[in-house]
Image (tube, rainbow, N blue to C red; front, top):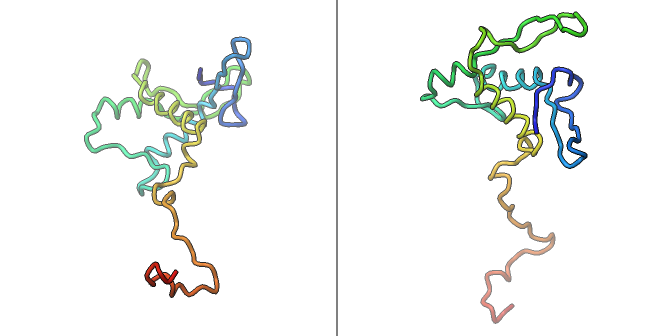
Length: 145
């Protein structure tokens, strides 16, 4: 189970045992993750590691979902202090795809997807010859070996 929680502030998420310890719930630092996702989608002009690409055929509906929220200064109900929080730009805007992106970023972190290596890095490297061997016997017919 996953849920956003505005009380998780000092780390990306908190793991809580529920249902008598038989299940785990991940309480997400929702403001932190929304900021991360925003940077991956909109703050980079140069593709690179972690950059999220949107297809040129991405529909207006998808774009509207992904841009339905913005960061604003809001008053915290508990502390009465002002802090940055992600809120809908207008009431009742659909932001379901934005939330899916945020939760998928958490899922990627939980399973270690950011530390996966490229296929090029996984290819076996050529074996090195031991020092002192010239390899001249390698070209000889089998009867000489």
